Amino acid sequence: MPSTYEPIATRTADGSTAFFDFSSIPQIYTDLILVIGGSTGDSAPFIRLNSDTSKIYSSTRLRGDGSSSSSGRRVRADGSPNDTRLEVGLGSSNEIVTNTFHLMNYTSTTTNKTVLCRANQASSAVHFSVGLYGSNSAINAIRVGNTNSNALSSGTVISIYGIKAA
Amino acid sequence: MATTFTKIASITVGLGGTSSIDFTSIPQTYTDLVLKTSVRTGRGTVNDALAVKLNSSTTGYSSREVTYDNGNVPSYTDLFGAGYNLNTQGNGTTSNTFSNQEIYIPNYTGSAHKSFSSESVVENNGSDARVEIMASLWSNTSPITSIILSSYTGNGLLQHSTATLYGISNS
Image (cartoon, rainbow over all chains, first blue to last red):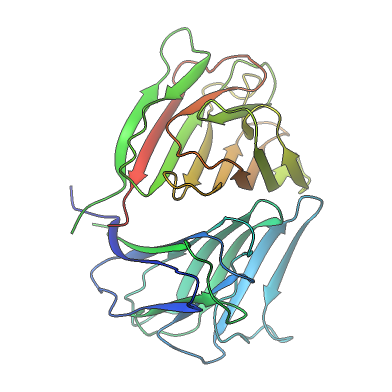
């Protein structure tokens, strides 16, 4: 059986850093899994790919907050992308939360990149989102940060795994 | 480089069914846990609940969920009294059909409260079926050493129900 679901890198926040950069991501897998576990500081986490700050990120989500369900999109009025990073997670300074991301076919140089996200904050909401990074570039770097640019809480663990289809 | 997503244990319910599936003495050598289940209970309705108890605890669980529930899409806040519960297949559904659940528990050996995500599907050749995603918190600082699955209504888990527990290492 080929080896798969391999750990690529892990960072643990010490309470002083607003973001972590994972660079030189090996181009030998099919998909990537990113797991953020812990208190993410005073806001939700974001991810940025390839240090790309262009407005080419968009997302669509299903949400339940315990009393009602809803769905929505983060795009311009005409439906085109308007974000400079993917903001599909949930976070809090006083609660342990879980955010998982699945980045498919990340080495492709011919397709835009789709990201599936499950965001889980038991006191607030549950989200299921799909994000789009509107670039054909292979993903070789991921930044994980606090949306308000404040520090990720101490003890938050961020891990990246690689999955091989064969 | 280490390979992870390792099977810790897999349990299949035999003839006559069982009252519970128990994973005990869970190794404390991984970073995260993933539990995948295929379950049908003895309750004679479409839907039942799969009660999940961590370390045999019946307290400290809370959740937010959104679900497809027989044509509606409600969201619930759950403050559970006896473990936490996921939608699961009762015995009043199409024969030989089993619900599926997945639970992802990060940092299960840590001393912080345990946040985890789960999802469940109940399919049926009838008017009622369910799909559910849930964010949950177990407000307990103990490392998770056991997981017990049972029918919330006490109707047992039927033959051929299966549950497999995996460990994921981030190093």
